[in-house]
Image 1 (cartoon, rainbow, N blue to C red):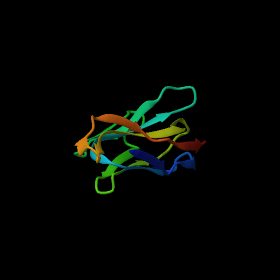
Image 2 (spheres, rainbow, N blue to C red):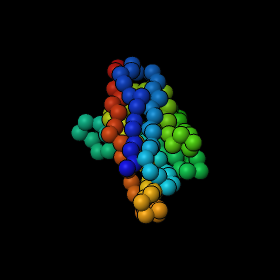
Image 3 (cartoon, one colour):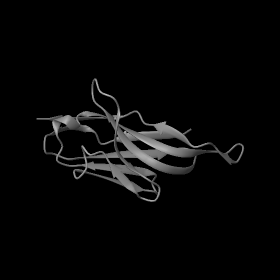
Length: 126
């Protein structure tokens, strides 16, 4: 069973900072990319940032220069440091992992699949 658990959301004033964490646990063979998405009320879910297994990163234009995604492979944890937060950053932030699970019963890796966390609320007040 693979689990993604986000933490670090909360209420912050405009201009403030938050550090989101995404911990990936369970029976895992390999993790490829891990991404952060967000969804504001009435809007579609959008990609915020992503990081590959090798550390290559990409950011949405809306957060570029204000956010940093990083990865601790030993802990299977990804962080999203967000600075200079704006009210328009208010959303539920979801962690997404592209990984291959491990089947210990059959001693085989499963197909690559997408996994999602439950989300963490970020609210930025003006």
